[in-house]
Image 1: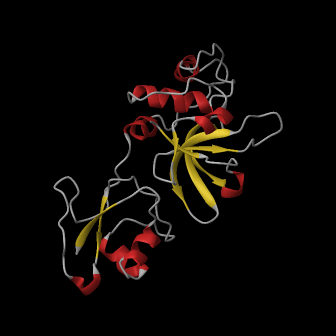
Image 2 (image 1 turned 30 degrees about the vertical axis):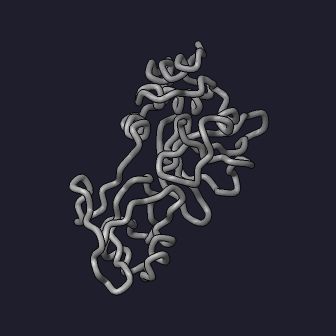
Length: 211
């Protein structure tokens, strides 16, 4: 086997095809990559996976931090921050001080009933030491950072989900042909991972990455 470094825009199927492997072969040398429903996660650029090069001869070895055995997701720093916030939810009655803290990061003084998905993304980036966008409007994140191909942890902007809204924004956790799974705030009034139709993605370059 050989080590392959994930590039922006890579997908498991695309990598398998690049090396002339069947998808079953690719899964076998990267155990844990796909779930029980054969749904594979988008990977973070820079992660090392195992491949079988033409002829089957090993041409490289994995780095010490990426062992050959098993699949170890490598998350961007802001994704690690956001993952720890899962389960933070609005209070009734009262306001969850954590959500109030998210809102304060974009200069909004309001209760947790205020739309806060964009504030959550902003707060997570700041906590990880990255430049944020400092806006509580989800639709404005379409101009943040730089556009990228879909990659684990990139910022994703959707079209407005209801009349008068500015859209939704979160971090990409996984995707398939029909859905993207976003780790986002204000999803059913909490921080959680949930699916959104790819037809709802904002027009233009909706996958964004910090500069």
